[in-house]
Amino acid sequence: MTNRVIAALLAGASLFAMAHATSARAEDSITVASWGGAYQEAESVSFFQPTAKALGITVKEDTTNGLTDVRLQVTGNAVKWDIVELGADECARGTKEGLFEKLDYNVINPDGIDKNLVHDDWIGIAYYSVVLIYNTNVYGDNGPKTWADFWNVEKFPGKRALGNFANETLTVATLADGVPIDKVFPLDLDRAFKSLEKIKPHINVWWDSGGQAMQLVKDGEVDMASIWNGRASTLLADGAPVHFTYDQGVFNPDCMVIPKGAANKDLAMKALAMFVSPDLQANLPLHIGNGPVNMKAFDTGKIPAERAKMIVSAPENVKKQVTLDANFWADHMTEAQERFTNFLQE
Image 1 (cartoon, rainbow, N blue to C red):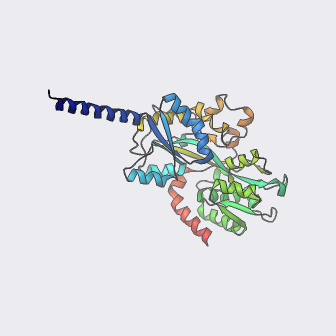
Image 2: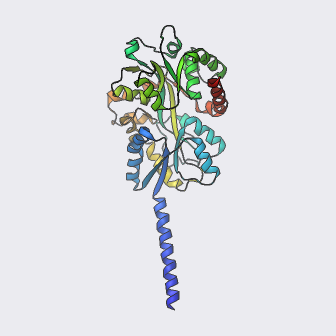
Image 3: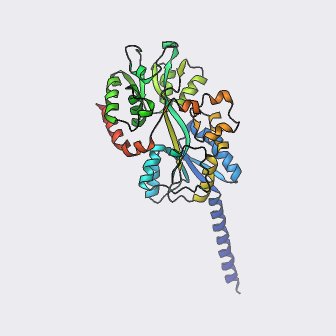
């Protein structure tokens, strides 16, 4: 055998070894995309890092703007994420578009999760809620307690803010019009918009982000607002003169999916199984105002009893709220958002 042949064989063996090593490294890591900020930091400590340690893998993190990002990756055959967090209505829409891998429930145990959040290709991951917050320096202990109170500008004068999100704010408007929480869905869009017309002249700000809503309340630019419960809890913890409850909260689930064509689907399945397990789910409310989606988290002993009372998805708090209907919004979101945007511009 000539030296040239030996060298060629050695080079080939080296390339094969490098390729195999690269493949192994790829299989030993996944990339998870969520919403960023304090929420993703809490998820990282609660879900991602413990999973990485338990499975002996690397969990890389990225941020997403939602379903549009996933759609572009899948349709462009350029999927870079293995697990993505979305709103439940986005998950329902993505299912209709065939954007997600099927989940393996021989690997993922959904026990303890609402069956409405367990689907062939997506599963719930966490809860948050839209709540009514008000400034106690302005109203004392007698501030608005319901969305009908928020709409009552004579009894509760003051500056107001609502979210620039059709699904959440139209649900709030329906509650303000007197619809009981168990009758809100299927939502009557015409009735919701008529309700919004009544309060629109009195809305000082239509906020676009949780940070903006929190700042508006913190700086006293508005006296009452709709706000995500995590931001409301942060204001309370920081000593701001505010009050909120979960009464008539708009209870909102987030979900996780594996985009179709994900490079590390099998490993992502194992990681997702850990993310939704009671033990890791119980970590989340210890770091952020969002609540576990797996109700068995409350049985782990990890959540102190006093803390449990304040968690958005604690059973007693769930009873007070209306759950956003993912399937309704999957069917009506495009129409409602376009109509909502035009409504605000009128």
